[in-house]
Length: 131
Image (tube, rainbow, N blue to C red; front, side):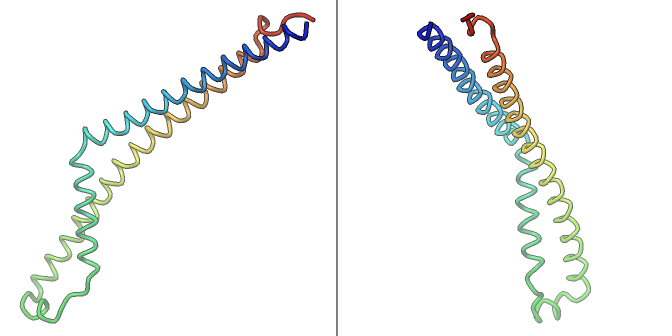
């Protein structure tokens, strides 16, 4: 009898281990979906990167020469660039949030599948013969 119990435990463990390994495949598929999303919308990522550059440039103080030569026109251009940069950052954040959500969903699905499989395998009557 102890041999049968040990075999049942070993069998259940092997099934759970196999399912957990399969969960890794699910996680890789989720990562692939995230990468595909980035490839499908490279413009969104490029706009986000450009926006970061705009905002970094806006944070640099205006030089005296710029103020003298550009005057009010320079201030208008700088304001429009700031607005455009903010819009681009918002769009870039939206794209990144979508990619992050897709990855989180894949991880959650993998976790749920692994937990469900582990529960099924440990509670299956065929793996626990009567003593």
